[in-house]
Amino acid sequence: MKKWCRRLYLDFEKPLSNRSSILLRNLILLTLRRTHRFFWDNTVELFYVQEGNRKQYFAERGRGFSLYWRGLKFRGNQLFHSYGLQHILFLPNDVVFDCGANYGDLWINLSQKITPENYFTFEPGPNEFKCLKLNSPLGSHFNLGLGEVNGEASFYLSSEGGDSTFIEPVVYTEQMTSLVVTLDSFVQVHQLKGLKLLKLEAEGFEPEIIRGSELVLHKFEYIAIDGGPERGIQRENTFTYLTNFLMHRNFEIIFINNLQNRALFKSRSLVDESILKNLN
Image (tube, rainbow, N blue to C red; front, top):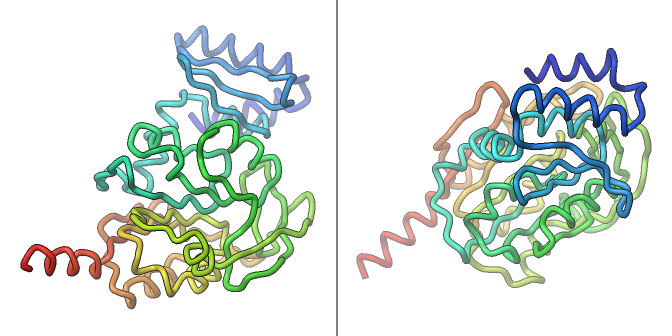
């Protein structure tokens, strides 16, 4: 279905106006008896999809049509299960870090599990960040990137495919400068506790982020990674590097998604601490 939607968009819809394209999509959804619909919001100049009382804003028309073609509930479950997050028992006070949050689709499911202020996101892309704040208005959002050192770095925008990154890719539309901080310094400054999950999806920049997180990694109970072949012009895979890095720091794999090069790791250190506390 995803390939069919993409083909339809490229062959026929892309030249259409926003209004015509939305009308066409909603007509197809009506025919299929789907309950969600696409819209354009003039006040913020963004697209959104609505399912029931929930809206999800997006900036790139074709990408949004593809992501939300089967609705928000489907998209939320699809993303959640792709990282194996159904294996985590979330509590309201748990803190989740979403690195490379994009439109904040992780919040579709997390919104039913944790306190809104405990959803920390990191997204350098300006349009993605704009959508993110609308999609999770009470979340803790930061328009910056995570990396190995504090400072500034070139950020390459490739928003149509959700492929923007700090590593120069094969295709990009614009180069900008973005603030970058290490996760070590961020956690220290904000004095955060109850770190349940770090979700790491940075289009190939994951090694730099994980190296800048070494002092605080042990504070996270779970780490979810996307290590697909997206690093730079050579499209290198980062899955093996990330896996070795985490396993050498007392994390174990509890879920693997081979199709998307994703995995979920659990800290052995926190498990050991919990056992010791119970014994005492």
